[in-house]
Image 1 (tube, one colour):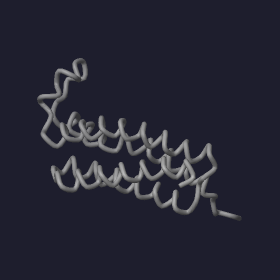
Image 2: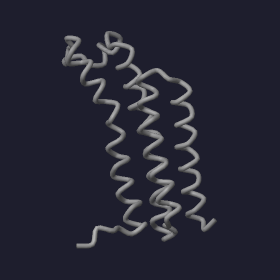
Image 3: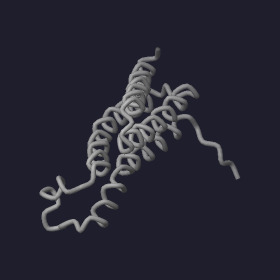
Image 4: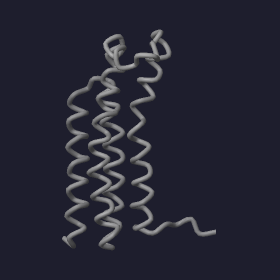
Amino acid sequence: MNLSISTSQFLLYGLAISAGLVYFPYIFVAYARLTNDFDMSAPRAMFDRLPDYAKRATWAHQNSFESFMLFTAATLMVYTTEHSSEYTSLLVIGFLGSRFLYSVGYIADVPILRSLMWLVSMIAIASLMTRSFGF
């Protein structure tokens, strides 16, 4: 049984994992809603009643959509131009790790971690895009 995957497959797995990471922060929002007598008939009106960590989790969730779109474009650029390599696999790992830590830093209210992880994720995206041009 061969469990190894190609670098192009790794890009696609990374894309799928990234889609899941978009919803990681929302676990904290759901928990806050369940424990704070949240009115499901007016969820947007109840935002102000959420604890601070859940508000930050909401913002991390929203930002994750923005970075996911850029990562999707970068990943598909590398995939369609057939420029995948071990280097692009490392960039995918770097992106996924930084986005996870970005959410953790945002929810835990550690601005320096959040900012650094945002920067790392943007560098990974830019590097993937650059790699798709053959550089």
